[in-house]
Image 1 (cartoon, rainbow, N blue to C red):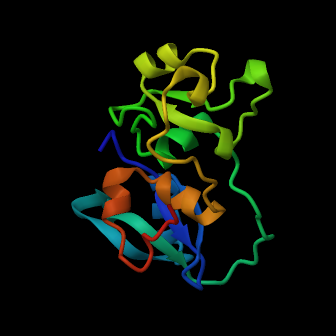
Image 2: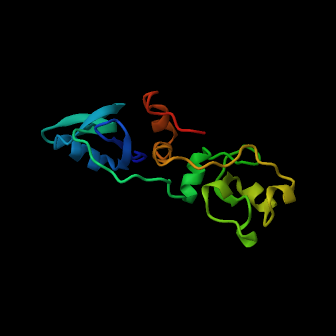
Image 3: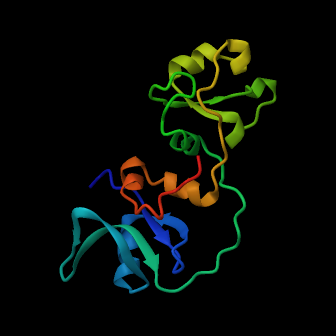
Length: 171
């Protein structure tokens, strides 16, 4: 259970709100502020007087009004997750983030200017654009919606186990 990822929190209206730690999710359920919508199959949380399934997705019992978020915040981890840890140049496992237009040429830290890259291709492309380096992108970078970024951040195993109606990020 050391690899346990965050628990997805849905609003009472079933819209993704945030992710919380397993401890916080259990507290929300025990305080009757949330219900478990989906749990890890075979994993349980045990305490002196209570036992419940390890929550993967919980839903709040009361609707929470949230200010509208137009954009998902950019991060290196977010780019790796968005690109499923696959290099945009060769398709192998990616461990770094590459700027399509290098920062030295005015490229920004943004969803549309960064892609996941393996260390070898990142080094080979160096301080050039993909065109200058002769390294075409296998897929174009895109900006995920805030809800999609949250779902993708769950991790591949947790994401694939979500109900079909929930696991539909744009690509």
